[in-house]
Image (cartoon, rainbow, N blue to C red):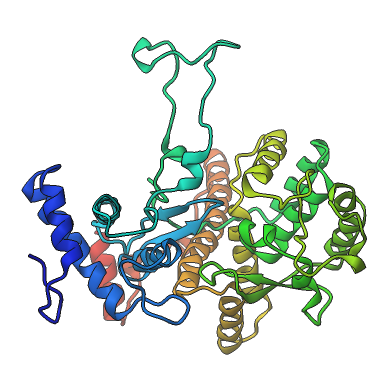
Length: 427
């Protein structure tokens, strides 16, 4: 039997344990319990959804929110929302029990549904993916795919279509420093070559100018533009804000012109109510499909892939966000005149990005320092190369390098103890 922190019988985990005994070994059942007990205690004491504690038998949306919070706050993961599922990235703070926890909690809700104790669907199962048709064509045109055992076709990676709502990614989450400051213009040029639509041009400009996630951009409404006093700003939801507009994004005057042109021309042709900007409802989505529905991630990704392929680049959509942060951070260091000003501007950037963990910027700074070191190292190598050429030239003419120009570490006297220890360590 399982008891809670107040020594009361906790029936759900007891029932789950005995249900699992008929399906897996006793050691596996116990290990699942060990993975779940901390979660249920956290659920009782720290979880929060719409201002209230989350119960184990709450709605699917509430339980999903709880699991996402637990992965982020207690297990040290980074969770990135996609159109219909969540990507879970392990970090250097992540515990090794993440995969085990997700397997345990998924099995728990499966058991509760089977036993009639949970009246909703399994929060760990992506119903949207299950309902889709995943019939993958074979390599022979017009023929069905050969079975795996035949060995005549490349195996299919089913990771992207697994039923799990939370998918663990293989790579550790590390923000990327994008050192190519011309990256947006290369993408814009590729878009022009691929005959991109005005809609996709505006969206991609939003990506690079605002640092927002693609899901946040595609969810923008006409009202999000109208309710900001500045004409270059739009309200937006943030990941984990449950669609509440808790932040804003800011665009350039050029992008604003393109946005208004898109709404009054290209969007108007596809919309079900073909009216101009002034007559649109606040609830109308800004970006819509050719059928007049909301423009979804999967549809946009197909166009993004076509544009990027045209340029020969391999570029994930989220890298636009990394580029934005990297360029903003570089701008902070280049335009600030004091350490206090740098810290103040960094706080502004953290506030704009709505990072839950302010330490995120430290990771970017660490990688930014690496970039600066590469520049210094490159300059050093260029100096070495130049001096080497001078030395070889002097050698050919039998000119000796003056001894006064040769400096040895041993010839210098260092008063700092730490520096002496440093050189001894190098030896």
